[in-house]
Image (tube, rainbow, N blue to C red; front, side, top):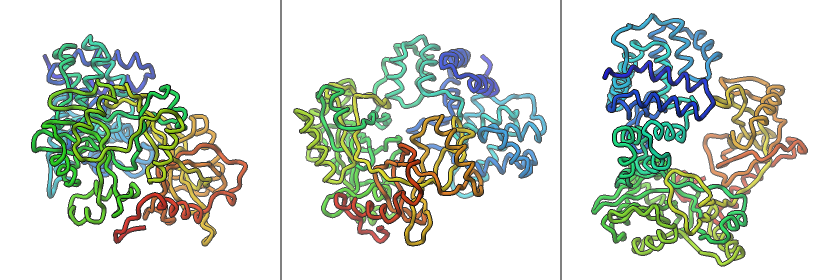
Amino acid sequence: MPETTFETLANLGERLEATSSRLEMAESIARFLKELAPAEVAAAVRLLVGQVFPEWDERSLNLSWRAIFDVVTDLSGASEDDWQQAFSEAVDAGEAVRLILAKKAPSPPQSPRLTISQVYSAFEQMAEVKGRGSRARKEALLRSLLSWATPLEAKYLVKDVLGEMRHGVSEGILLDAIARAAEAKPGIVRRANMFLGDLGEVAAVALREGQQGLKQITPLLFRPLKPMLAQPAQDLAEAFHYHHGEVALEYKLDGARVQLHKDGPRVEVFTRNLSRVTGSLPEIPQEVLAQVTAEQAILEGEVIAVDAAGRPLPFQHLMRRFRRLRDIEETAQHVPIQLQLFDVLYLNGRNLVDLPYQERWEILEETRGEMLAAGRVVPRDLSEAEAFAERARQEGHEGVMVKHLPSKYRPGVRGKSWFKVKHTYSVDLVIVAADWGYGRRHGWLSNYHLAAMDEDSNSFLEVGKTFKGLTDEEFKQMTRRLLALETHRQGSTVFVEPKVVVEVVFNEIQSSPQYESGLALRFARITRLRDDKSPREADTLQTLRQLFQSQFQQKGTYKGSDSP
């Protein structure tokens, strides 16, 4: 069976880009998968979705847009004006490269053509390049690929390098396509993906072994599962009544969710995005080894930063630990951490994800030893639930989780089995600039720079950005409104007169060296326009500073040398 050309994948990408029908997308992908050789399937699926390596795989291409730009410019001789023209016509970087090469580059050799396997092998070689001179060697590999590629193939090569495919194929559509190609039940395909976390491997197993092969897939130690996700609820009553009170409440900790894998003396710590962080948090494996009674286990919990009194510190200080690769012991003294467990997914060879949440909690209680568990209550009524939520607020936590007692664990799925109810704040701020959007928001000003009046300098200072909260129609209306207020542009940012006031909700204010104001809102979202308020009536920077300080009535205070 001849190897499949990369052009075949690129042509499929073009067809997918041109349709909005989920059914047509799934059918097109299914036909493509069935025509592949078995050895090509995993690579083809990964390249199709622009995810060269699985999320849990620590390899990365580590090639910037600047490197791509330099290689394409050298191959094509494109000028700055050429690039500006290309970006004025293109919706993303891949399309801009296609336009440049179609106009400037000589025709690539016609034979032999690039194959999917060759492209994937070249990407694997790029990921292996390390050390001094690595950028030059990576660029040489990219140059070789692009010199053999047609402009259309180059478009999709660049999209793969940047991980920005943007043809509208979601994970759900691809899983449906795999089910069609393998004649397997969609639910079984999705379940296999929950455990493997690799669409390429799922497709390879499905087409090679069919539904029976997929059924044999279970959680694997040191292959992190995607976390089950919670649906936001507007208030506690909504979440409580949805499950008719058959719920448990847990503290929603303002930390980082982690998954712990233990097999005998080996313990690894993974983040919610499946990255390994064991080396940055050495006290966590030590605690697991000392306390967990099981030989094998997959546990879930939350890591928070705490002060000397054990009170939670703001989230930003915890990130000092997760990003740390050196001087870990010294940093640990300044930012002590605390792990609180809340679930167990695997125990001594037994898959627990299909057990009810209440039963998993009971197994966790028997397994965790003296390790902390998240604060929890099974309330008799709403008033008891509200009292627990208030206690969470007073202790400095960001809200509560509301979990249906019979619910199974569904890796990577966001549903209403779990709700999250946060303590949020609301302020009125002024839009002072906006960035042009991309993808679905192409052509709209959709990332808004939010500012508060500094009464000392009588000027508006930025405190954050957000693209959340507006509908498509509101994005269009806001774009027209802001363009009428434009003062100047810088790159993709349009600066405007500070006249539009919006109400913004957020769940924390952080200190920030990024902004002249010294503050930044976390998880900001616009809830409504405040046309009834003038910019002078919006909240001031001084008000935000007071809110920032008031957080520490519940939260601990960081005592490091760079404390706010």
